[in-house]
Figure 1 (cartoon, one colour):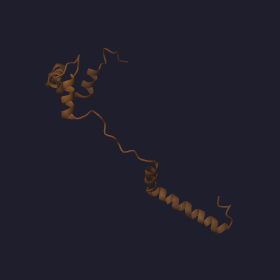
Figure 2: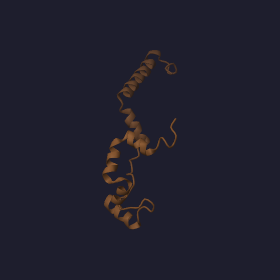
Figure 3: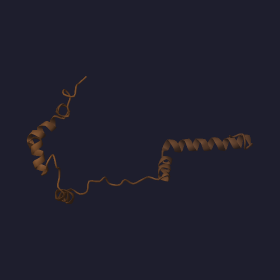
Figure 4: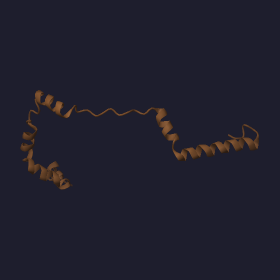
Amino acid sequence: MFSRSQHTNASTSRSYFPQLTVYREEIGGLSGLMSGLKTDKDSGLTSDQVKINRSVYGENVLPQQEVKTFLDHLLEALADLTLIILIVAASITIIFGLAVTGNQSDWI
């Protein structure tokens, strides 16, 4: 097993994502990233920087997805060819069962 000192996030990102190591070196490491983002690793963004980023990049929210109703799911399931074949086969079985026996309680 790996101890925490042997297995860190940095070593994981280097082994699984070698392109991140190259990119990290190109921007100057963590200090280069922080200066590029115009932020501080201890205090983060100021309120003014947040307003500017929101105007440039937009709100940090996920778009609302359309919720399907039960009827939508039912109609989607009924459009399946296998289910249509099974419904037709069951209907034919019930019709012939009623026609052959003549007794309405025998088809169940």
